[in-house]
Image (cartoon, rainbow, N blue to C red; front, side, top):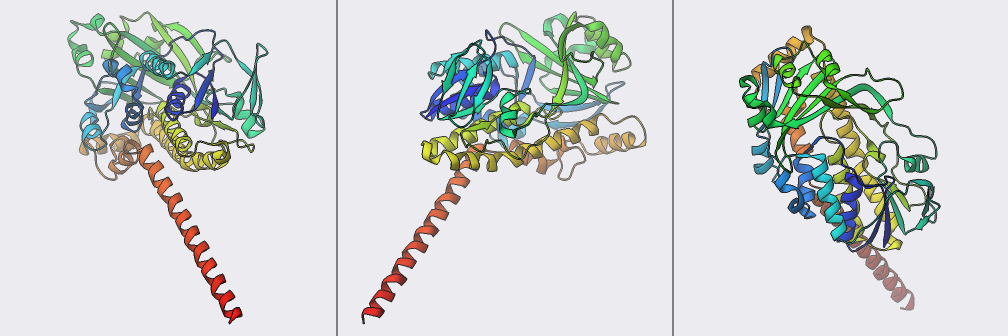
Length: 444
């Protein structure tokens, strides 16, 4: 089939790669005039690294990935370690795929290279201004019209395709929080004893505190090792501003009472990226009634970042949709494919989105009695336990989150379909036999 993807982000490129590998003709329509690499670090947990490896993307990105040994949660004021739970060991041994940290630019560049080598055609400076979901077709700001058998909309947080699918506005919902993103060469912090562990041990460092968190981890940059910091707190950005470049003075002021190591690190930072956080309300359908237009990634389910699963969910979407279209590749089976895609994905994404919100309030609770109870529990329950209070340490939750295998889900669905087909054939044959017996009886 001829498939058009709206958006050249992480989900858009991943689904393009998967569809091209499945034998479809893929065109990508991108609003930006050129491909720019923004953002900072990103986490690729086993549920998504499994898919990228299956698609062969690992050969483009693996040299830029780090393998964090564990996740450490610390008290906001002094860095007291509250709990550590392993990441590397269960990723490799239990979930059979690595947990990676990578710079978003390196991931995006690798995906773009893979998509281009597979023959995906990309049209830049082509913002979509109109979609006809029944043809289906789309028109860009330049007046160009593109027609295909299927449109897959990966046009992000402010998706216009989402409005077409919903038949009403579907704007993102402010979370009331923002992030400051900081990335700097680790060598800038060398020789500072209190920062030595942060720049040498690959791990997920979380400082948890009232109405805010700080996250740090190492990245293998193109030329050198980087350290990535994400400061999450309540919004102070001016109304109407969603992203901007700022300086470290505001971050130092906002987090001046936190672990002294943070203030020390910020002495070496000049520029920060400020980013307002949004999410989306859950919608009942990701598929337009025409059954020729569907949503994927943030356009379908933008979620809070507190579990680092936003990109992972878009990658999972890509594997499921492309896997269905590989098994059922014709226009005639497209309605069945899109309904199956929605059935296999919508509840999974909603469950992860809800868990992400829960994680926010668990890690950002104000100091007081509940916080002390939380901290005492964490200190007495290190590692990963069944029924753990902290979902990042809860065995059954991690098994469901990181153990998710999109390809196993597809095989289960195909087996179910084959079973139903077999039952229908048996029922049909039994009906024919009964009809024949009745005819013989009447003849006799």
